[in-house]
Amino acid sequence: MYRAALICICLLFSIIGFSQERYITKQGYISFYSHTPVEDIKAENNQVLSIVDLSTGNVAVTLLMKSFEFEKALMQEHFNENYVESDKYPKASFEGEIQNLKEILDGENGVAAITGDLTVHGITKPITMEGKLKITDDAVNFDGSFMVTVADYEINIPSVVARNIAKEVEVTCKLEHTPYR
Amino acid sequence: MNHSLKLSCIFFTFFFLNTTLSNSQDLLDILESETPKTTEIVSAIFKGTRIANGHSVETRKKGVLEFLISHRFGRVNGGFYQLFGLDESNIRFALEYAVSDNFTLGLGRSSFDKSYDGFVKYRLLQQKTSQNTFPVSVTLVGSMAQKTLRDYPADDKPDFNDRLAYTTQVLIARKFNSAISLQVAPTYIHRNTVPTFQDPHDILALGIGGRMKITNQVSVNAEYFYSFNPIESITPRDAFSISVDIETGGHVFQLMMSNAITMIEKSFITETTGNFFSGDIHLGFNISRAFHLGNKK
Image (cartoon, rainbow over all chains, first blue to last red; front, side, top):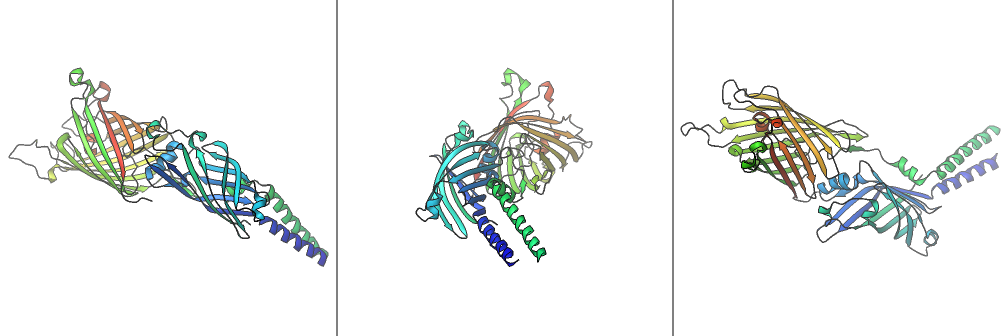
């Protein structure tokens, strides 16, 4: 009986330990920045959901397009209504893998290389990004950025505002994950 | 002893199954289940703050100053001699300032009747989806107009109050899908002075308007106002307008055809005399330019 109980407890602990390989955040930060000589446009989203599985190196991120906040309210309306069509495509998502997880876990490297598929406006394209990845027992923090070509995602920018919106926008992520039970 | 062993085993199996199941679960599915349920406000029911002549439920966000330039030309059936109405025009300039996201103040001046008008617009309720749904948006509009045209005998100058008229509207709109929105607008108009005894001081009307999006930047709107007790001393007709909204960066252009030449509620709802379907059509446009004052977050 004691042996059985001991085994059970040991197994339980290993299971709990195993499930702590996953880290999640629901208040991640992602912003994008478009620079043109005419104007700079910046939008920020503080309600990003992101999860990392350290046992596999898999990562997933989702966000609501309507949660992007712009400096000017009209920009936000045009972004949702005219460009990314948030009623039709409410979410953007990313599914990918940390390529050099072992190096980071071993403390050899602090910069993660992540490849995966980004879905925006209903279009999925492969992307790669790099960013600082810091792993501790109770936190997995990622800090990185990458460029997105607007035309890749079939987002149509009318010619009248073409000079105001960059062809490539810079996306910045700050994701601070905590253990997921 | 046996019993507790069995219990432990069940416990263990349960935990084991549970974790293996959630392991095979896709990370995106976990995020899906962790997504907080939120209430979403339905935005952009109409592109502009006007459907054509009348107000839409839309208000501008806090700190936005909108400058509106509107023209209504003469009647198209004036023919080539009048260059299809373009020789004549009623011009209205207006400044509209959003004190908060829900509250807008506006001032305007029309060349027709040399009228000044002021309005307050308050967004009372907003259409919502997802968690707590609400079917419609409701906006209240109160406006006042003062005619300053000297069309009276020199020895019979009317008081300021005599030439005031008030309009109160309850705008109720719903966005049915991303393309189609409809609005009804019960309207009450009061005039301090009327031309003859038969004319009512108080007029009730009902406005119906809608928009259909053609592309992301272009929509077609239509608007109709029915008067329940029209003015007797003239032969008024219900105002009917069709407009096309073209949206660019900070502008909305509205091109329209209407049987009304005026742009103030008390005038176009109750004093329109043109018959749209026999060609008494006024071409016109509204151009709005939004300026962002202060730091809007």
